Image (cartoon, rainbow, N blue to C red; front, top):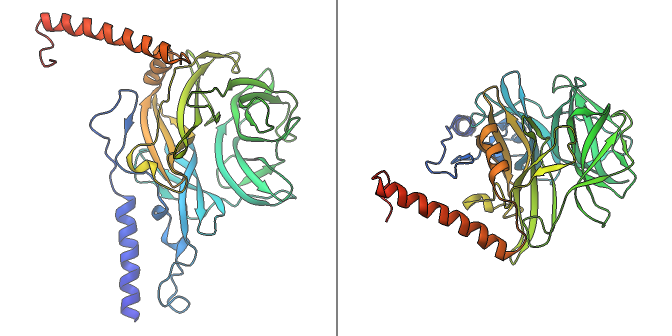
Length: 388
């Protein structure tokens, strides 16, 4: 029995190490916007063995998993001391979620969890569940974690902040003058001396991505809301939409990543999309490319909440590379890599949604005709002879 225990224990750690150190390769052919990778960057099996198993043979002679992990998904992201860091939503077999940090040297594989989950302080009304933390490095010097919270008194927006990702101060939950807010995101810079917040009101009125400000994060309250990006029928955001991670500042404006949901016969389908807002007025949309940026594909479509992707974290590295971390079907984490240059090209030059089938056909016909003329010209010059 003792020998079997040792063998099983060795195999557990060996298999875990093989999983964590497995190299992640991009698919050979992509769409030119980003590179997709063959494997998830995090799954439930990536969580440490000592989080799940009692490793003492006296108290666990059969080496059973005592506290199982169901899923790892919807992670906030940060480039921290030259490491790619994710604050992961980890869901146990008991359905309760908590936050834990995983880091990688390259952002696409070799993610390892820190030894302990985040010990998140509670308010006077303890969290029944927490979810989907967005990370914002604000110009005030703090790293803020904004997340969903469910408690006996209310469901809303929880706020914590840190300077080392280890010790977190809990601030009061966000108060609003309208009924509830979820998927709240903190803008990285002051806006006219105040903190800007992207909101998703849930009061049954006009819904979409809203904008509001608060004078303080120690007593956060939004009195008024301005709609930035409303949902729209017969689009990728006809059922609802919300801000993903904090926007990226570029020379052309603030680059925003959001999610949108629509109805299908099989249920809701959620995708990611981009839009660009004004540098001085982040609540004003300047470019809104039509259609989605990223949708669930192949095995990404299977999971606890099937046919969905959700992103609340992305990272820009020192070379201008962009790493978009997305949860697939509320089960596992994936990454695509792009660049600020490529994403701006997509945002600036992709036609907007014409909102009618006829306009969609006109846009595609224009593209087809331009391409056919270019192919014919290339064929005549002998530069493009493999297209029939």
